[in-house]
Image (tube, rainbow, N blue to C red; front, side):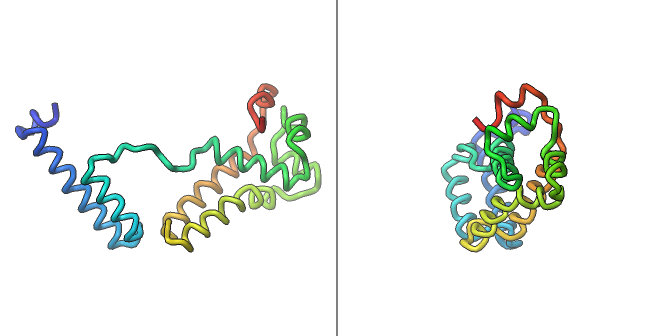
Amino acid sequence: MASEKRGVSVEQLAADVRTRLRARIEAAQAAGRISPERAAKLRERVTEASLCGPRKHVRAPFAARGMVRAAAAFLGLGRAELRAQLPGNSLAGLAEKQGKSVAALKAAMVEPAKQRLTKAVASGKLTQARADRALAKLERLADRFANKVFASRWREHCCS
């Protein structure tokens, strides 16, 4: 056990971890990376030792699903039409076939999330720096997703 290797009790080790977490929370708040409300919630979770609760972050499958919907709307296709056209193609390829730019496709894919991030920053739920990092990740995901050539089996898993 880690506590035995350090020559301290489990309680002492847990107290040390809580102290370090509180210091990180204070530093993040002072640097403006988290709001005072978020810092208070985190401090409460440290005190209650409930740090491993359910994750509330947007995961890639959900982000990808939203991007597919936005791409379908941009391309003027319904879900069934998109499912029929995607196997063996990419979203970028479909956009080019319609005479639309790939950059505009990617912007359309990211726009719904960008609006949600803007609202979260305006309401104080998210700092601007964190929103910028999330947006950069989403833009990279949109780039990869737009250029991905979908296999024929993808039809079974998408947009159902």
